[in-house]
Image (tube, rainbow, N blue to C red; front, side, top):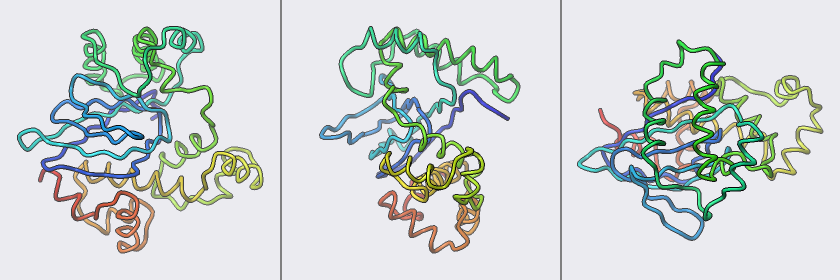
Amino acid sequence: MQQAFRIDYYVGKRPQRLSNVTLVSPSLLWVTTGSKRLFWKEDTLDLNASKLLLLSGRTRLTFENLPEQYRFQSCQISLFEPPDEQQLRYSQHTQPSSGPWITLTPPLVQTLELLKTLKLSALSLQVQSYWLKALYQQLAEQGVLHWLFPESQSSTSQALAEYFSIAPGQPHSLLDACQHFGLSRATLLRRLHQENTRFRDILSDVRMSYAIYLMQQGERKLIDLALRCGYQSPQRFSQRFEKQFGVSVSRYMATLPN
């Protein structure tokens, strides 16, 4: 089913330190229990329930999730539809101080809580879009909507990542991607080169993010994780996971509730 947005939940019972976590789509991150220590450029920021993190697609994060009384919980709202141009222009004219986070206001908290209660599978794409536009308007009025959708953001790597995320475990080939987007091999590779990335790196990022999602959903068997993420070898999957995030699969699993 096509979605305008998706809400995923992440939990932990022990500190979770992860490096190079790539967001596939523009996203809102809201810590509701515990805190997230974000290592952002030259700064360190502790995010709690009073702050909302706003990040554009293909952003890489290094952070540590810190439980409070053996529990950490956050939600990520992934955004699949762009806002109206009018909303973006309004946001740019009311731009506050720089930084990828804002202090939550009661009206914005109310909207986020409402979105969390929606059963998206029962709503048409058009209805989901109406709910999303209301959220976008609130973010525009705070001057932060354009942080999620910067005009300078290149679109080829973003589109490719979202294409992979539909079925991360499939054996995606360059030829298949070219056919899907109606591009020649040379054109696709040139665009990715201009965006300083590679086809295989984008695919790997998507698969590793999917691995974390699967573990958060309760998948604990290494062979099943590997296969569902497109790896025939559990050992190769484990090596890639540790290289990407700086922590082994087993150590990450140990931070999750039983």
